[in-house]
Image 1 (cartoon, helix red, strand yellow):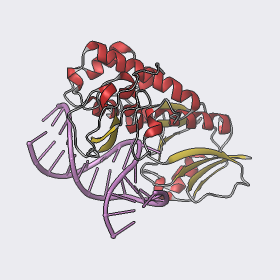
Image 2 (spheres, chains in turn brown, purple, red; image 1 turned 45 degrees about the horizontal axis):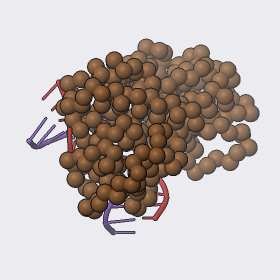
Image 3 (tube, helix red, strand yellow; image 1 turned 30 degrees about the vertical axis):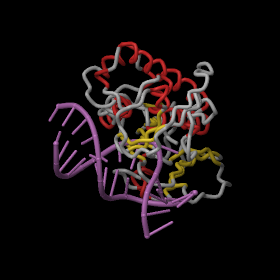
Image 4 (cartoon, helix red, strand yellow; image 1 turned 90 degrees about the vertical axis):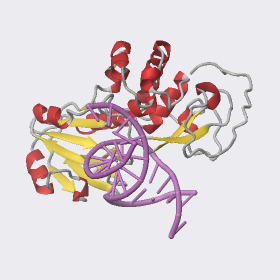
Length: 283
DNA sequence: GAGGTTGTTTAGAA
DNA sequence: CTTCTAAACAACCT
């Protein structure tokens, strides 16, 4: 799940669950998710501290306290849940921050990322120094500057966290589909109009998905078609193409977005254009 | 067993 | 320097 909208959802979970509450205990069920900190040091640094208002940058959740700051990344399968002490520990509950009758649990099936601890805001700045601006904070002019001169394919650029922080594989596909730009187009070769469309699609996709705290899998979203064996474009019904960009499965509509040169890893279907009444409207 | 998965990092190549 | 690829991490799923 975790891309920018999901992490924003986790930020709200933390906020409503434990903000302003004092941490009594930190239970580490699996030290495998702690990065550069021992269970003992994490607990000692946090006990007696109070959670402040959490922030987010890209896919990072920044959980400040009145002492040190906890940095959480959720990899592909992580989440944050608000529990009571009575809730039995799930198999993938790795760490619990216990605050009275509430406890915040870091839950993660695979353990691709994890939890870090830094002393202060300067530590946060240092830890996240490689990240570009948060995708929600980028206006059209800055977006153009970020894209400018990049010879990589546009999807690779959108997913590059050092350029723009927060977009992952699903969002990148969704945005390019809405903007009607093929994912393998070279970023530097995009017309001003196309860059503008991508930026607007990004704003819209982020706004709509942040509101619900995850990427909706509704019928008007490309993401909803991902798992079907032979997916069709939600907009025009054309059979979608499947390829691989930066090692990630990429879905696009050859009719709406253009063929694209990349046939790498494609399903090999000649893709007869059905081309029914184009455009069942925006959204 | 084979191959897939929303992420990041590293090594190596072009 | 930029960009791409593959592999690794770990634990599921089909």
